Length: 127
Image (cartoon, rainbow, N blue to C red; front, side):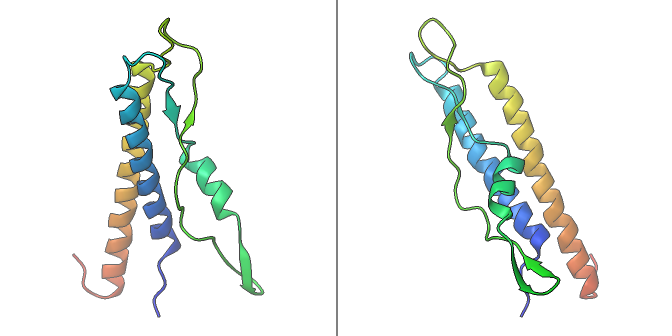
């Protein structure tokens, strides 16, 4: 009867993306001194979501639904050049990415909180 709100679905996808990207960043940092290691990253959420969310199907005139939630993420090598030992990890870049990912995750949590408050208010339960 009640379908999952699209905004919460997107927030769930954003949180999952942030978690997956943070895992890749952690692997990069852990391998910062590994000879020959190539830094990897996952595409930005906007790119990944746009690629998968654009498959829309009209269920009736004037009504569209979006594609299912994001399934998985592919980490790809992003930097080829680097240190003399062949390692391409830049700790400064990884820390910057880490801060971006933290902001994405906090945004997802803020969306969850806001939609929960709206639903509680609609049900008359308030805070």
